[in-house]
Length: 217
Image (cartoon, rainbow, N blue to C red):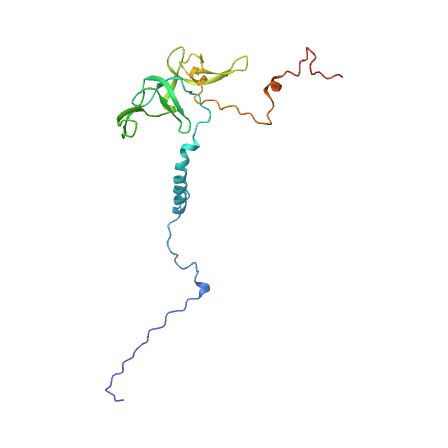
């Protein structure tokens, strides 16, 4: 090598440092930033589960709120308090307990298209559409105003309906006479071979005053 030659020095890059698995969780390392979960905000998974439960409940929503004890009966005089026929009075024609609805005679009329068939003519007819039971109120038999219905027991133990409310008279609301009429005929009596004859069933076998059926002690 001569005196006039130039020497070039080349530095090789140093290899990357090895990461010790034990020091990987060093607190000095900057952690990855995550959005903190607010306790009042449900997570996405909980929201999805809640929405699915809500969709399932929507199909049974009407069945869960079916009225068990009905105070309005078929044949009652009522007033419509909501809807297009608000303020009009009528008679309960039918009670649909599976839907919490009633049909008022001649009220809440809607148009229905009926196709012509064998034995009847088609056309556009007005029929009575059902109303929710909360849209009607029974009329007070004394004041003639809509009122709520309550119950009380008479001296003989009979349970009766009474008018209840701020402007109610508290009078008895009689049971409609139409309920005494059977809509379905009574089933025919069947006589089986092992049935007790009716004469023996009606025979009086005990009378304390006459001494019939009293054992000798």
